Amino acid sequence: MNVALALFRYFPHGGMQRDLAATARLLRDRGHEVTVFCHTLDGSPPTDVEVEVLPAPGRSNHSRARAFARALEHRLSVRRPDVVVGFDKMPGLDLYFAADPCFVTRTADRPWPYRLTPRSRCFTALESSVFGDGGADVLLLDERERDNYQRVYGTADARFTLLPPGVARDRRMDADAASRRARARAALRLEDDVFVLLHLAANFHLKGLDRALHALRALPEALRAQTHILAVGEGPTDKWSRAIDRLGLSGRCTLAAARDDVPDLLQAAELLIHPARHDTTGTVLMEAVVAGLPVLCTDACGYATRINDAGAGVVIREPFTQAALDSALASMRAAALDPYRRAALRYADAVDLHSMHDRVVAQIERAATRR
Image 1: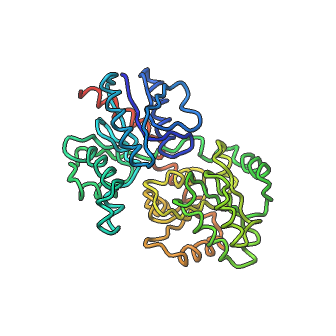
Image 2: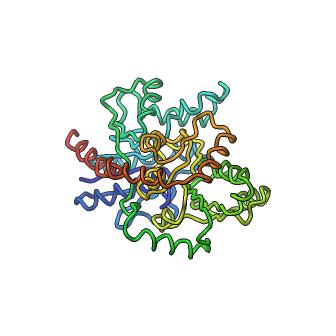
Image 3: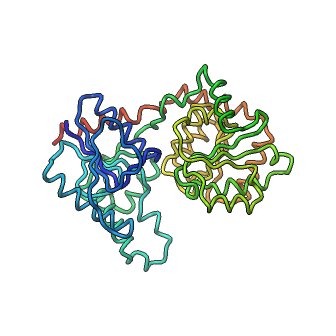
């Protein structure tokens, strides 16, 4: 097959982008020809996969999205692939990988004039092209989002396929866990007796780093003095450095850019803290589970229900309050965490947490046979 994978922006460490790259590699390994189309390419693209950067002029995200959708439609009318898979919402797709929440639902509480803005009208139109009549079949990551889409667009049940998580197998705890921990701690200059809160996120604000910092600041002084946040993903910026200084946490927090030694980082920490404002799935929660790392998160994450099912940590219910997070962190910081670790590893052994990308490829191959 000739398969087109389309998204607006590709960068190596985004969750959606990693899912695209894993899908592209599996398709290539099965002998299919794969082309990734995007309007922005940051960093290295997936290995041995063709990437086409299409022109998408505009000063705003929505204008570039609209321009890219038009450019892609024109390009594919010439190239004519067997299957078109979108990782962002746009017309002309056979399959949509639903990494983002329903735009209409997410913005429903804004004042009604917002619906008349160019941004709202653009993203609503792109979403409608996927979920309205005659749109794509949907590869669903969070079952709760199906209800949102169906309330807005009436999308038929038959168009949805619910996917299992797609955790990379190198995240699992293995016989090398102790050396991974020592290696990561040495590289990051973290002492053995420091309690490390790991925060992995491409977007620190969206995934709640500010909430985590405030929770650290609220710990009793004796606990706070032996606790350290390791925030990896977005990297150091003046904004976050100033926030850390204002809270008096300059010696208690390390900011680092996205890196490839995530299996080591998962073993180096005592707790994953992920108080996200929204996360369609929160794959990092499942990465923590297979690594035996206890989790503290919000139920704004799609996979938060799995943390509850597994007994692998504590989930803060919505609507979020800082006091609830502060209390939960203090309790977990003072408690023995081994029961959470054991529960996480039992769940990882009992439940399929790895086969998402195999299922995506199977759906792509099935879509080709229907054309």
